[in-house]
Image 1 (cartoon, rainbow, N blue to C red):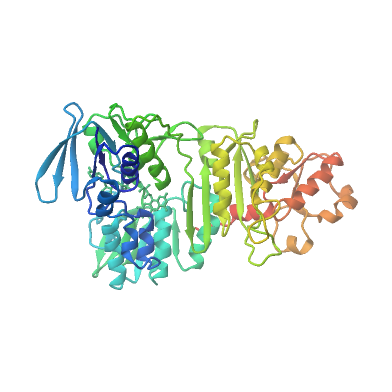
Image 2: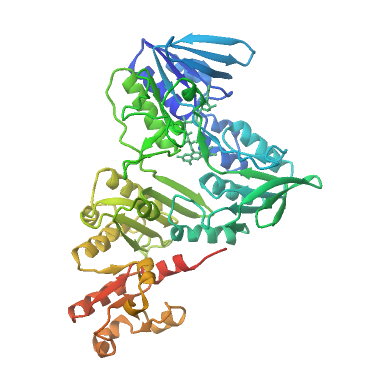
Length: 549
Ligand code: FAD
């Protein structure tokens, strides 16, 4: 068996190592266009910020190491320029200018995805960068080391925000230009509010709804010209506009690709050619929740796919289950994480869902250092099956989203979340873990014990059906800010003040985070009222209401 793996970083290196573990006999050639294999893409922004000062730490495994430990034929600085699917050969352009031809029995394609470079005038000016590999990183870091004082980051995705944080750490005055009205596109907008606020608090100029038109050279520096006419003078520009699958080889070889360019594979990661497999950012995957084809450029899926493709090449049937899009960002002390479908994705696909919010602390409030978080859980309104979850806060968000990611993949429901037994002592969690809390709130909604309304639903009600809003917090909390038209009756006075509440209208209760509102709902339900609690209370209202553009 002669296996050729094209692309030697995340998916490719993982496939190569797995293939060797399964077969001592296979001839395995790992071909990489660049000078490095298996480097830590995800660590690149942190070397720029000097968080990882030693560049060598990013070279997870050297070609030498792969040769010694896995007996791989590793060829760096070698670009595969063609695959002949009939003659079963590939052509390789080597750095010495020579061309080599290799035969193959099987191929695993792991060429990744390239940063999108728009056709704006000026994208090729010196000082305008994208970030994919160590060489890009060296160029950006070099500019900062040479004293760049100002940076414009175009695109507020994961890599963009990581770079912004690291620029700020280096004392570079940074402007973030984002075409949408939110950072982190895969998240629902309200869940990103605390991240935007953290950016602003750290001195980042955040420009939403701004489209870049051109990059200009100006007085020895650069300037980014926006469609609105604004001109942003700067010393360096990084474009973080997403990635596009590297599919040229696949297309030339006649392999099927999807509408957005991802190489089509089946559940065994086999392309339309039975002897060619493909993994990582270059492929189209099945969305775990919707079942639809999609492209999700993440390191975890690429790694697992590498393993699975190697299994299949070497005769072990191994299926890829689809991609949930479990992702996390840490920036300026805030953590945003998600798994599965977002609300906007569910809306777009027309799939029925319900959403709840909870705002628990990461660990017992009486133990020092407790930090608040917001969890949003999306689930099927009939079965309670999990469809997606998002978390924003600080410590402990990662753990809760990981638990929810596992639950989602296992096909669990919100009723299962109620029953989950998770580790607890005061410094780590609560006897009712945030995941349990989310389960209680969601299952209470489905059982009818805790009728809830979301803020968008409340806002969409026509005036004749608009409910009587009651704020059940303390008067001082109400005085510090409340929903328009809300009447204040603290929950402890509710039973004695029922006469003040009209019986001919629906009532919506709310408190700070949802808990007192829930109790108020129970009191009013049992007194015969038609009542719902505003999910997540005033804190969720603030997430929706605070805008920064
Ligand atoms: P890659 O790892 O990109 O490897 C593809 C390799 O193939 C490239 O090195 C390329 O040179 C080579 N190649 C392409 N064509 C050819 C050819 N014709 N011949 C020879 N070689 C070829 N993901 C996360 O999950 N979490 C993170 O925190 C995270 N942070 C990131 C930060 C940055 C700055 C970047 C750039 C990415 C980050 N990612 C992160 C994404 C993650 O790195 C990718 O999803 C993952 O590396 C994809 O693996 P891959 O094997 O498909 O492609």
